[in-house]
Length: 273
Image (cartoon, helix red, strand yellow):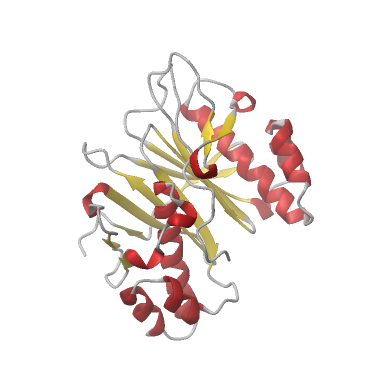
């Protein structure tokens, strides 16, 4: 696990002239890569650009090549579900702080923002129309020094919550807090410049997330959801509010090249703390 925020913050920008993305919707997709067929993997690789294929081939482990291919194909397909072109036609550039963005396209009326995440065996992405979004996923059964890491990177209240947990709950509470924090940092696009101990999440109430924002940020500006797509994975999304009320969250699992089932959050910041 990378204990500094990963430099794959929210991608931004761009247009959707046909406006197929319903107003203010959030499209959230994930895929369990270990259960996908060889034909599905070949189809995923076929959607990648030449640069993406080159980056994919640099991975030594076959599982890493698999997850990279499925992650980037999933993003391309999801952008096409929301936008105006086939999956192969999306082009990306590197923006500020190394953040991936859609290449500029003239005549656009709606911007698309996106973010991508992956861990061994699970990949996910989110696409919205213009608002900042971040996603992150981790496995709760990874071997890590959860108590030490919480003391180093978490707010005092978050660290106390991890330290007071018992047995397997230690790793679970650490990972649930970590993915929420990293999703928020990726949505902000600040990457390594963020102080993780300056903001926090309280998970002490059933099904609820309470957000304690960093200085200068209003809690009401942000919305969060936490998912358990499998028993061993936790997946978080951070979404910037635009002042017009809550956007519908269309969260679904994808098998092959299409959705195969809805996913409901186990916690949201919409619930009262």
